[in-house]
Each structure stands twice: as C-alpha cells, then as structure tokens.
Image 1: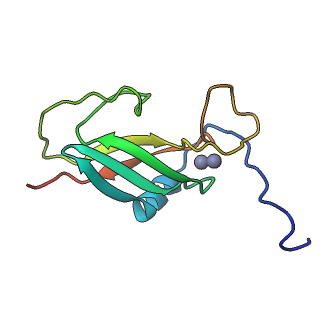
Image 2 (image 1 turned 90 degrees about the vertical axis):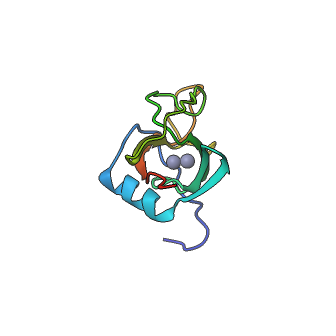
Length: 116
Ligand SMILES: [Zn+2]
Ligand SMILES: [Zn+2]
C-alpha cells in the first residue's frame, strides 16, 4: 500500500452500536455546562472520528430525536442520567439516506448526577 497518498476510506452509513462506543465516548467527550441545565458534549465520534458537538438538557428526556425536540423538565434527579446519542457529522458516508446526518453510529453516555 502506498502510504500517505490514500485518503481515508469513507465509512458507509450503517445504523450500528457497540458497547465500546459508549466507553470511548465516556473517555473522550468533554462536558460543558453552557446554561443551567444545558450541557454541550464535545468529542470525536467513536466510529468515524468526526468531531461532534451535542447539546443535552440535563434532565431525563425520552425522545428519540433528541437535539431538535429537547424538553426542559424542571425536576432535579439524584440518579445518573443515561443519554442516547448518535453521530451527527456532515461527512460523506455512502448509503446514507437523504436527510440523515452522521455515520449511523449511536450509543449512550451516562451523565453523572449533580450533587449540588
Ligand atoms: Zn460518526
Ligand atoms: Zn462521520
């Protein structure tokens, strides 16, 4: 193989998850609180390595399409929050359906409960 000349092979879009994705995201993502109760998670997609920026409202929201329809619920919780996430990169991934973003990878992260 000629080193250095081949661009990264584009990953095809596949809706896929892996235990490892959550683990890597937990290691690599940073959390910043931008407003009270609104967090921004930043880090590389565990699958395609695109850098992602994912807003999360730090209360339980059970909504598949988080990111667009976040609901603010004012109910402090003692438990850790398990947040579903998915890749939202705009990179080129073959086979991606129209109107979709990302490489198809999804995973969950655990946001520790605030103890304040
Ligand atoms: Zn990705
Ligand atoms: Zn990607």
